[in-house]
Image (cartoon, rainbow, N blue to C red; front, side, top):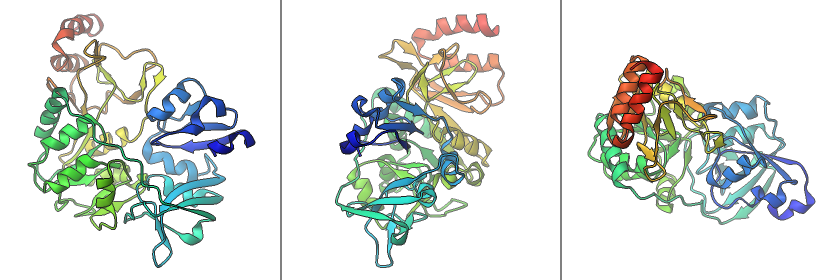
Length: 389
């Protein structure tokens, strides 16, 4: 499409997180394409904040309804699938999420029949008869390699690891903190996985023998996920693997499903948190950075699960230690993704703050205790001024 930009005008595009180069978001093709980003990746951030694309705040669990409910009618669904099997079924491979709903809702379905796409199992199949136009390609999925783990992330991972019991079912995302948490969980036993995103950090736990799924109340023995991001090693592992059950996000992120899992532990991160417990995760002030995603889906589901735990894990500082991520109040325009009433447990490299059932003054005191020491005096002074601590 980007190559035909000079032939097109006002073509609307709806997308979730996209990986790799994004020439269709370049300034020079802004008159040809208008984007609605349901989650903002690094390649879409500039376009959104310069007004060339729009950001739609939405819980990940609600995205399929946009398509199936006609809120965002789709003329065309562009999908990337495996080659059909002997019965004519193509797998959505790395991305079932809301792609399955888009495929069912669109007037026309155009597919890349990709020989390099892993064939994942579960609710992940589209029959060749549902595809109107197909193009054969041999294009490996984009690799998202594991980031380096520093001392701060390692400490956070250890604190989080201490909160995860044997037999727990875990959800975590991608990045240095989830990677560090994965390291800390390698000696656990019979962990289960129910997550929106399956990464190399989870694969490492499988290979270490920590993940079996044998104690899960539902989908026993299965790793349940909606989409994959990682290395070719991950994509090779999931290919035709009956341990992997790919599901749409209106299942993986459904609070009613999540809460059925005993000892469900949701591990999510944040850009900043204020002294009352409000979590900002989709913007830095008025600058949109990522998206609402599935954080609240899993935070609430885990909190409601029997013996469940909802964790926000973040470094205590940003900008090379110049800014405290624990702030007296959120920056102007910062988006609250997880409300102060939904926050349960907060972890930094300085420890664990338990906020459930705590008053504003008690929360402020607990959060100051896990803030970076360089900022604690200033935070305490503001806590006295704002909240009479």
